[in-house]
Image 1: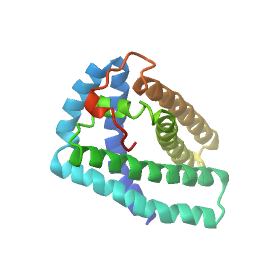
Image 2: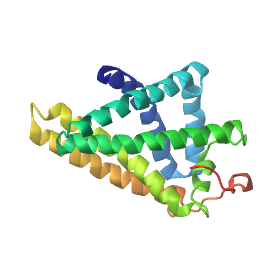
Image 3: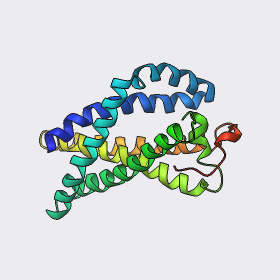
Image 4: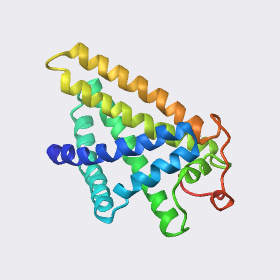
Length: 201
């Protein structure tokens, strides 16, 4: 179970690197975000690649939940508890976020671009979006930080703690930047009328 979780995590991690690179490019403006997305989609929107990514996420959830239960039932150490808690937040985030994207594409025929994410921060979902996206993005970095700590704890625990703290700190700052960007606090964000209706996160 744990081995399968780690293998599927490698595929998810590769996608997330590309996905977060797209977010970071967005700090330069919606135009830069759109250009990067058009190029990246040539890779992850290929039917075979997209199916593989979705399968990897499904495996992550199906193998992750039993691991979370195991950690909590055995009352493992604080880092494992933190890893389990962040993992549960990620499971909920993935289910809602991926489901929202699927509904937007297949039901409302909306392209899930910068405008789609930004529209989530428009009323009436503004505060819910801050909490939802903030928790989801930050939980990812907490989870990854715990993994880095786990890798180094036996050979060099101080390095493990350092990597955990730096990863969580960087994740907190990146989360703040993304929330400010999509909510229009870094620069003005124009949202097309088609996107301005209540929709899932």
